[in-house]
Image (cartoon, rainbow, N blue to C red; front, side):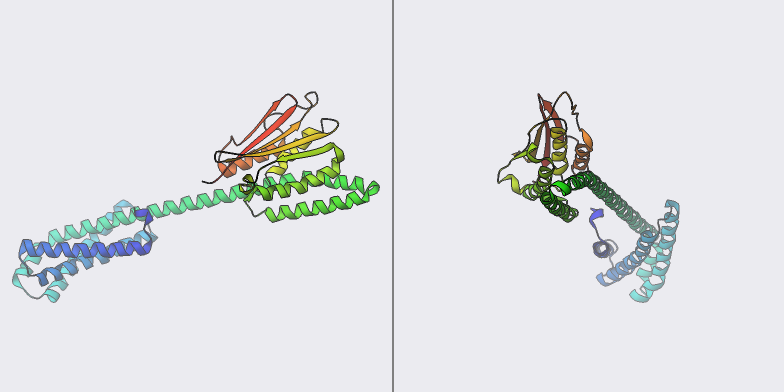
Amino acid sequence: MLQNLSYRKLGIVYLLWCISWIVLQTLALQNTFGFGWETSLKDAVITNVLIAIKGYIMISMMRFYQPHQVTRLGISIALAFLAVFVMEKIAPIVIGQQEDYLAFLERSSFIRGLYCWLMITLVSALSWLWFSIREQQEIEARKTATEKLAREAELSRLRQQLQPHFLFNSLNSISALAGTRPEEARKMIQQLSDFLRGTLKKDDQQLVTLGEELDHLQLYLDIEKVRFGHRLRTHIDRDDVSLGMKLPSLLLQPVVENAIKFGLYDTTGETIIRLMVRTEDNYLVVVVENPFDPGTAQPKQGTGFGLTSVKRRLYLLYARQDLLTTYQEENVFTTQIKIPQSI
């Protein structure tokens, strides 16, 4: 409960706490010692206002300085003694020179001092606990913010590491096409420009819809189809429901690039890259399949920087290691990604 109190709420609670003790002390003086309500009320107000002031001094000290326990004990005793001293000086002036009350005031000095010390010590202990909790919360908040910044920096670094490889391949293809097929080279430059522009726009977006991700992926595939010509064919199977589901931006391009790498680089002839999307419980499941030649390719779990980076991104975002799996059956290498959806 203490950790949920702001400074303003703490002040209101402290005020209500003082008023409650004024009421209780007034009733106790009336019923136990037989003083009139006016005398009892004045005595209770003076006592508890003095305690409240001394308690506020302790709270202020705790806010800016955390003294040792022995130091707090000594300060609380000194403040209690001072409160009793002031009480004995001003009570006769405010309440009046009533012999029975003055005698009571003198006899109760020790009890008042003990009462003041206990109340000030209680305020001191609660203040120390409250400020300690607040300090721990601030430490945890700073730690969380630091970890978030570190995750975001690593995610950004992973995205940036993926782009140069694809960019260099595209520029090499443009260079090769410029002399023999200038129209296709110009088309590829425009496609590359659109792809990079979309990539920059997505840098600040953590999650996008599947539809947006597929649109951006199509720009990448168009470029690759210019590079590989008739050898590269793609098949994307998705439904309208899955198009609105969320996934991390720029997640599919490195997966498809990995599939193209193993599907075309180590095989001959026409190659079909299949991307299938389905919903499963509260997950968006994306499956990418590519053929491979067992004689020239040896795909392994997490093969290549692309899949390694995707797995790392998924771990940083969802704190799970099981969201990306790869397996091979006969001449087909399959990559499966499961994206948790918010409930």
